[in-house]
Amino acid sequence: MPVPLIALNDGTTIPQLGFGVFKVDPDETERIVTDALEVGYRHIDTAAIYGNEIGVGRAIEKSGIPRDELFVTTKLWNSDQGTQSAFDAIDLSLEKLGLGSVNLYLIHWPRADLGLYMETWTAMEQIQASGKAVSIGVSNFHIPHLEHVIAEGSVVPAIDQIELHPGLAQRPIRDFARNHGIAVEAWGPLGQGKYDLFGMRPVADAAAAHDVTPAQVVIRWHLQNGIIVFPKSNSRERMAENFDVLGFQLTGTELAAIDELDQGLRVGANPDEARF
Ligand code: NAD
Image 1 (spheres, rainbow, N blue to C red):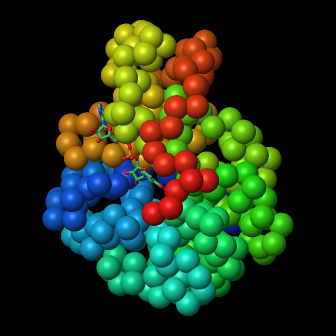
Image 2: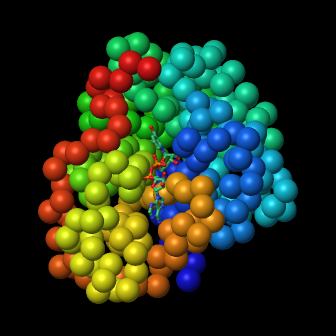
């Protein structure tokens, strides 16, 4: 069964299920992304700060998969906010990836304390116009940051990539994004393994009912909620498990029970407080 495509507000589409490489060791990235591509993933999410764009690029090149069958995202790091530094950052990322363009370029964090994300967004618009990024978006933006960019920018972000898992369901941002044509991507979709999500009753019960794993249930919950998701694993078995989620459907009752797990449980930094 093919991975569903989500339509973005700029007329392009994105595979709803991908593979993320946060904390993937740069020395192992080529092998791990090669595994992911062999398993069937065609959407890779990296970032300049992960330090592994070179490995991602090598795996892509070695795979021989036509460029137009792949969706590649990278992100502009906080210290590169500003106009010229953004232009330099995309050039360096493209050089490391060995690509002429990325499918999606994101501002990694708003870092509103720097006072630069609006200027950076204008630079992102120019990067998009130059063709170096087909789509542009943001990450870790809260509603006020999105409102600011929508009000003052020329382009509405195609994507907001935020921490999102059953314990932190982010309803207000998802509702705002839907109303403004912004697609939502989940980072830490499995809670980064930092709380016992897989042992929670609604997840465990649905896994038993469908004879699948708890991780597969959580990925399905994301997919059936229209969220774009790219769980990370260094293990090829788990990559395959996380990709094998298109052959079953959670019921409305199961989805609603998982929705009840929302408790504002953040496993990463709060974007309003992040100072890295
Ligand atoms: P995740 O929720 O995908 O959790 C990854 C962890 O879950 C792995 O360490 C692995 O041990 C475990 N895991 C994976 N598959 C499993 C399975 N089938 N069964 C049991 N355990 C399993 O967390 P993540 O990697 O932080 O998030 C996914 C991607 O989101 C990242 O790789 C990265 O691309 C992106 N991300 C973005 C930001 C941001 O600020 N924009 C921050 C963090 C991550």
